[in-house]
Amino acid sequence: MRSGFIGVIGKANAGKSTLINVLVGEKVAIVSPKPQTTRDAIMGILTKSDYQLVFVDTPGIYKAQSRLSDMMAKTAETASKDVDFILYVHDGHGGITDGDIALMKKFMSAGSPMAIAYTKIDIMPRENIPADIKKLYENGIDVDVLPVSARRYTNIGKLEAYLAEKMPEGDKVITEDIVSDKSERFMVSEIMREKVLLKFDKEVPHGVAVCVNVFEKKDNGVYDINIDIICEKQNHKSILIGKQGRAIKEISSFARQDMEKFLGAKVFLTTYVKVKEDWRNRPSLLKDFGYGL
Image (tube, rainbow, N blue to C red; front, side, top):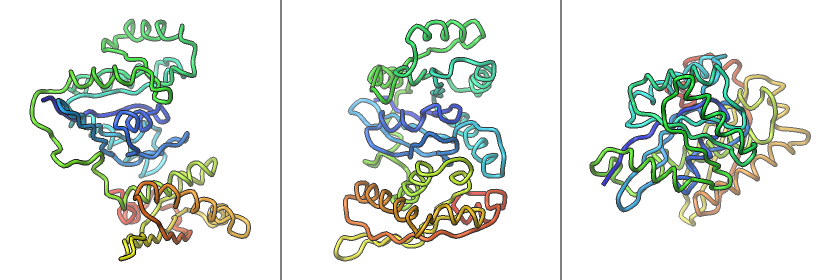
């Protein structure tokens, strides 16, 4: 038996959460095309007969603009030091910059062995891959590079087998039959936040937190869920609600459908929008909203 923790590190929008969801075989992290989608370190657990891979999905590396984004960057750095292996996820579609190389070197020096998952090869010229890998080696990135596409499932099996071989021998590190360390309540809040990220552009989604006030399964099997969507500005609240409440109704409808799929039961969902100015820079509110400061 081989088992261990794999820190999944990389820049924002590199495809970390999508890759973990595909490897684990279930949705354990929300996905959107916007930076700061993942805010917490979330475990996705893949257990097979002869190995267990515990993926630690971390916030994307992103220039700190608030206490929240600074906290997210620290979460990624901490995770890189507390794992058996680092899987650095790089968006191959974006090429290789000097900044990418510097960031890879930073995590190479964290103390754990590392490999690079070179992602999104389905949306880029294949001839670019050898040139990029050569550039990495010429700049001192002497680690294995594995080209993959999570969306097309290209080389995912090879990546899984590779990671299994890199794990230390030993018993399972997670004994329970689960695929994530996060609670249903947490995942429900993340589903709602994902719908906001997918629906709105620019600054509004980044200034949103989701608080689950009520999460209760009734005797008839229906979940009663009451949620507050927290934003930073009054005009953001107006955007989130929309004309005659259309936007919030649409978001809530899509969220409820995914919640029902995730929970395997009917959901009665109530959603409100509230304003807490500059909450991303207020430690007390960050803690209230579950960001652990």
